[in-house]
Amino acid sequence: MGEESDVRDGTHDSPRYFENGYPLVTSKNLKSYGLDLSDVSFISSEDFELINNRSKVDIGDVLFGMIGTIGNPVLVDRNDFAIKNVALIKENQSTSNRFLVQLLKSPIFERYITNENAGGTQKFLALSKIRSFEFLCPCKNEQKQISNFFKQLDETITLQERELELLKEQKKGFLQKLFPKDMKSSPDIRFEHFEDVWEQRKLGELYKIYSGMTPYRGDSSNYDNPEVPWIKTTDLKNKTIDTNEEDISNKAANKLKLHPNNTVLVAMYGGFNQIGRTGLLTYPATINQALAALEPNEKIIPYFLIMQLNFRINEWKRVAASSRKDPNITKKDVENFALNYPKFEEQTQIGKFFKQLDETITLQEKKLENMKQIKKAFLQKMFM
Image 1 (cartoon, rainbow, N blue to C red):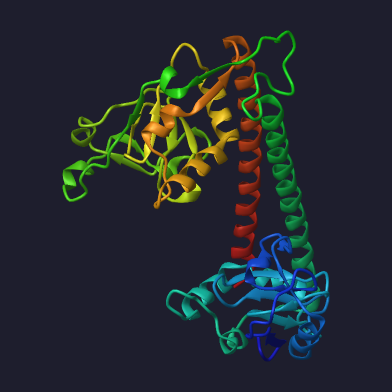
Image 2: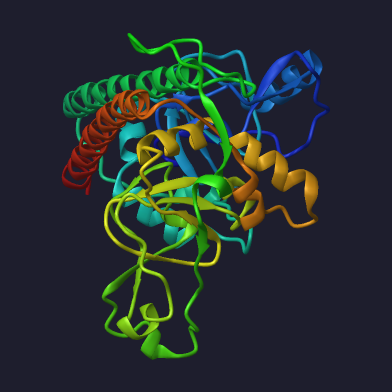
């Protein structure tokens, strides 16, 4: 690499940051889809000029992370920023950067990163290692063909990513409109023919709240011959639970309650970002002690319930953050959570609407993942 291209890196200093100024790009701003400046620090014009004396970025350069998050190569389409702890590769006459950026996304470079990066808790790839990276390079015409092929794939992937993001934004908007805000008696938008005010009850008045446990891991018989699904916080994705990470033995399951299909689960702890996450069982399962289980009843449609809980997830987090040294919610907090709900028929309409929307989102996620796997396969086959 060092023989073929001008390979540099950005500043290693920590300049003073300002509310406005020139963006300072680090590895966190390098994404699979390109440069992302939505979360960036700003520096003065003096520091911008000083850094650019060493490592000025031009349109057509390649950047990738060297420290912390290593990789995520990006072909630059703007030059109004400076870089820190980021590798910079200038294009030369014999190797196109459009070809090079795909090579750097390939499994061959991923293996090189894995073998060569250093550091303990903070991973890094030295500039000398980047310059020492050896690769096979075809003629310019073949480079161009390969680059154009992957450019078309990348454009298809980007389009599908935008479609997925649009669907998720639409869902957020519908959640805002179809559920009452600030505990009002009705939402902003109603389905046709529904006019009655919504009722309000505590979850503990509508459900008996259950929690589970973790079978003793020191006893291998609890996990040998696993046959019974056992749900943990990490299995909750704010939608239906179709698979889970870990099962337990029949012996261990005999000490736990087996919750039926359509039970709604809520995460009470397991990390602040996990608190309030939900899942809807699509098969009978046991749960661990970090989860609260609300088994189905005749008053509340499960999909209606899970959508409202998702809409109000920040209320769980406020309770967790304000009341305890170690953020969590308790079974009592779940019991005291106030639920707004309309008549059964309107719940059914709302639940059906969001279920169809979630199925569309899941389908788009699968299409996107399939395209990414196709690209990964081509990267594996077309680079050596």
